Length: 303
Image 1 (cartoon, rainbow, N blue to C red):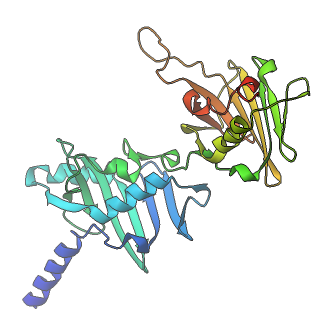
Image 2 (cartoon, rainbow, N blue to C red):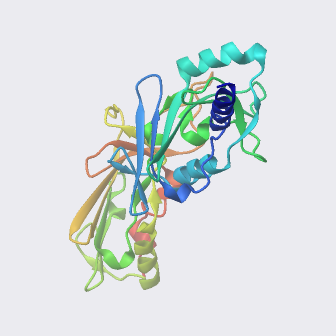
Image 3 (tube, rainbow, N blue to C red):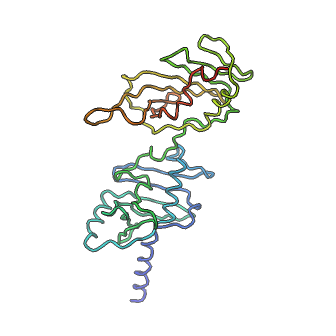
């Protein structure tokens, strides 16, 4: 009887230390849940990862998560003096992680960092002992690699920020309306290729610059999503961009972003931004240096 008890105890101790999953390509779903009721479901279908059955997942975010799941190791046990505090913190602010793979599921809780920020407290489901976990050679704590910021989950930390991923061959027409300087507005049509100014007059175009402009829409990203409840009543509409491709039309509207830094001199942010929304969807922040190649003047296309 003692031998059986001793064997079970050793098995339990072994299992509560096995945080890593070696073959992450077998993972088809990851569920994360924080103590404030925020839930994230990352699911894989045909090698494409989706968040909550709604949005595409950022490639770098899922790669970081999967590499973390694969590489994490126990750094050391939690000391006796810290044990109760760590257990309490995991129970009140820890984020639950469920990883599904090959008809198996691994469940553990990710807690805060150690005081030196080089380890992360974690506890395997139904285990008694928490551990300090790390990635060998990585100097930092692990919770941000699970999309956790301040003990909370945010779906926007996982979303693919792509606005346009359009091959130039698929574009039939592009129009850009500049509200501040309407004489810089233009329309480009294909088949036959034409450049049309704001007075609906065809003008001579530079073929290389026009082709390059079409190529600019292969990968355009926003900085972050801001949701639908954004007050832009004090902002100005700056641009309307219409792109016809593959039988549909995408409309991007860009607005001024007049927010200042919250410091003593209310200085402007270091990065110049605009608000934007695509197809009347939620608001985004876009950066000027990314969109400078899109919000150009007709003069940039002329012969």
